[in-house]
Amino acid sequence: SAVISQKPSRDICQRGTSLTIQCQVDSQVTMMFWYRQQPGQSLTLIATANQGSEATYESGFVIDKFPISRPNLTFSTLTVSNMSPEDSSIYLCSVESGTNYGYTFGSGTRLTVV
Amino acid sequence: QKEVEQNSGPLSVPEGAIASLNCTYSDRVSQSFFWYRQYSGKSPELIMSIYSNGDKEDGRFTAQLNKASQYVSLLIRDSQPSDSATYLCAVRGPGGGNKLTFGTGTQLKVEL
Image 1 (cartoon, rainbow over the protein chains, first blue to last red):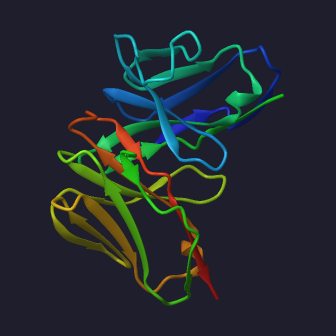
Image 2 (cartoon, rainbow over the protein chains, first blue to last red):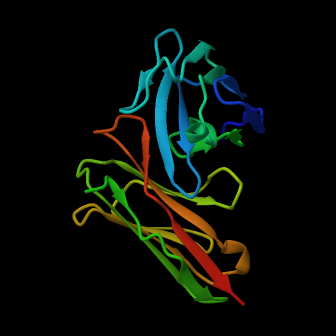
């Protein structure tokens, strides 16, 4: 299955600032998925990132708040912009590892906004 | 109705017992089903996938799928304290395309 390197692993940020999270995959993948997991909650999909096209955002998430880049088939970034304490969550990237392997997740970024 | 529903638990079972975790989904044409285990502070880890009706066994884990009733379950035999975690049910497509929709997770506690 694919191996994903995600960084940073955690950060504490001031409100009003932005944080960019990076995910590097050890193989080429068509789609990368960005999830948010709020404290004590399950995973909510933010957007799907395709190489060479704009990301597709889920209801409740907008590009101005969560801009995504996908410059090639092994890398993507998610930026959390103009942060507020409500953005304090774990952010995870994910890729489909193959038909029989399901989806693999990065190690996550634990974001705290103060 | 939520797309994927699970009892939040906690589900407590004694060591050595069978833990039974259940999940129902609303999209009748969903095709792929996954169980993930998530330890506190860690990212989800895939433990089982199932695509066809019936049972699929892998070691101490058995996934069961019933598409007519729109439910999928996970049985953990000989439960160990190390199985204590949150178990997430996830469903894929075709209505949702390639993305996964997760349930809220069931917290499992295996007691000595």
